[in-house]
Image (cartoon, rainbow over all chains, first blue to last red; front, side):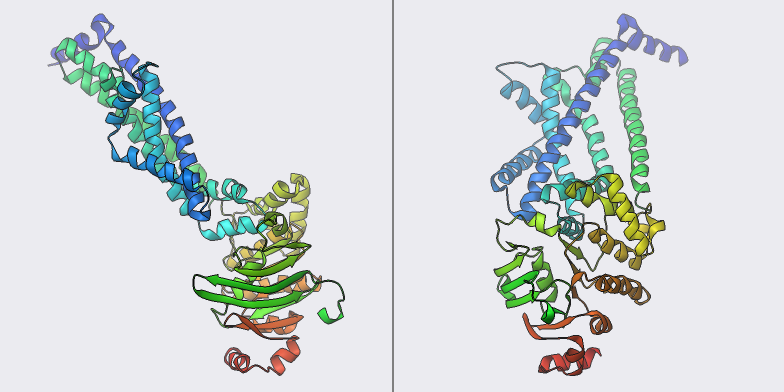
Length: 230
Length: 249
């Protein structure tokens, strides 16, 4: 039994430096997730502000409409289809690299979900907070920035963290455009060694550890943010 | 008192109207508020008194009329309302302190960001005012650590930190436990003694009687009666006011 496991391990990870499929793949997964999160936050923030502003003041009608279309399309189609369209259709004339394509596709996808999270955070803040800000003389943008956003952000930290965990795991479909991410790395090893157990379990454990570490980080952040409330 | 004051009014409300959809909440209201006036607005709930107050700093968008304040028409869309709001403090029924900031930050953020005061300058002023309302030791607390009465006193100080020319109070004691009403009214009374111009929507008849320079009765979107408090409570003329007073006194 031990003998077999050791041999399995040796075949899957040591021979031909196959562990590099895992580490290289992990690097790509982290790269894609990190930059997609950045794009997602930026885009989501922007869309949420536009939508909330329209809800409160009925200004920015055209932008709000565009945002509505964006949300409908992105949330109504699978991310893997969006990724393939991005790579094989939109970037078909000029290949900017698979990682770049994946960052853009996952970023745009995540932005739609983050936008709704931010927007629900903003509308969870009592109207009185907004009125208090305005009555002191802050304009709309200042009131949003100094008074509404910090409170809204605090309220959505757990939901936002969950979205990023989902994003990290969703990048596992990147193999569809021939990108060698963590999942694809494990898959390649499997196809070389004809043994599925070791590489796939290794991949799963790595995802699990990343998610657990991230969750811990978020919990620490939540505790810090909460301190000011009491 | 306003009768003795020959200056131009601080706030001139002319033919103010406000509709919510088809509902006409304010109907053709005209009133002058002079420097040093303490105007108490009383009336049954739903009479439009809060809406009137909220129109004064355009938290509620008037449907018609004019509100002249320091040379500008507040109702005019071209008026830089944010600039004028800095001179009109507002105190809400629900306090509306900023829960994510310390008390000190609550008090200094507007003077620092809007009036260009230094943190130090704003802090000194805030501490001085906090001391006056007896809450200097709470500067580093967060709003959720305070009682309702303390919150409302802080909310008053927050407005005062902008050095306003008029203070608007929207039922400032209505959300308070009875034993905390007194401490807030005391602060307001001191403000009145310092000749702050105040417009107070309230159900506190005692406060109106003792502190107001003018009391106005609103019902159905109109001001039905206005008088000095002595006259107002002793000799009400309007029938609806008589009925109202008979219920609340």
